Amino acid sequence: MRLYDIDQQVQAVLNAIESGEIPEEAAADTLEAVVMEWKAKAENVALYVKGLWAEILAFKGEEKTLAERRQRAETRAERLAAYLTASILGKGEKGLSTPRCEVYFRASSETVIDDQSKLPERFLVIKPPPAPAPDKNAIKAAVKAGEVVPGAHIEEKKNIQIK
Image (cartoon, rainbow, N blue to C red; front, side, top):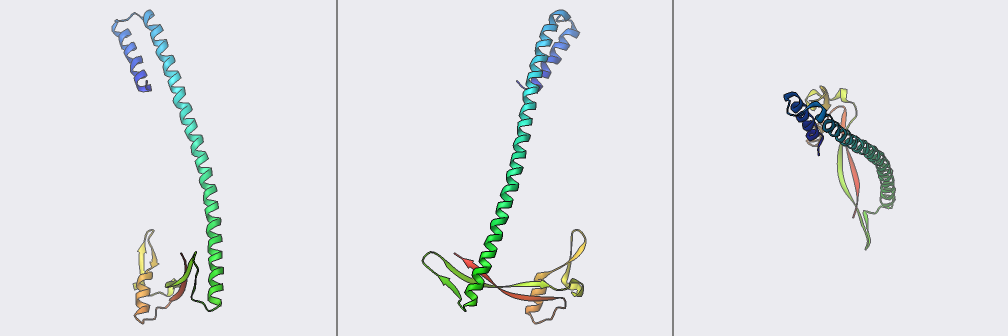
C-alpha cells in the first residue's frame, strides 16, 4: 500500500467519526492501526531514499576514479603517440606497416590565433556570453585564399593514425 492510500484511509476514518457513522471509541483502534501502518511505510520509504543517496555517492566516487584513470590513459597514449611520431618522422619514414598494425600520418591544418586584438573585426563573432570570439573557419578560408590575417596564422600538422 502507498502512503497516499494510507492517508486516504486516515481521512476516511476521520470523516466517519465526524459524520457519526463510527463512535469515537471504536474508531480509536482503527485509527491507531492505520497510523502505525503509515509510520512503517514512511520509514521504509525513508530507508529506501537513504540507500539511494548512498548509492549515488558511490557512483560519484566511481565516476571520479574512472575519470582519473581515463585521464591518465589519455595522457599516456598522447605521450606514446608523440614518441612514435618523432621516431618515425625522425627516420624519414612515411609510416609503418606490419601484419598487426598500420601507422600513417594524415595532413591537417589548424588555425592558430596569435593575438586576438589584432584580428580584423570581420573575423570576430559574438558568442554567449557576449564576447567576440575568432571565427577560425573564416580566417582559414581567407588565409587559403592568399590573404594575410594579422594576429593569426595556419599551422600545418601531421596527425598520427594507428589502425
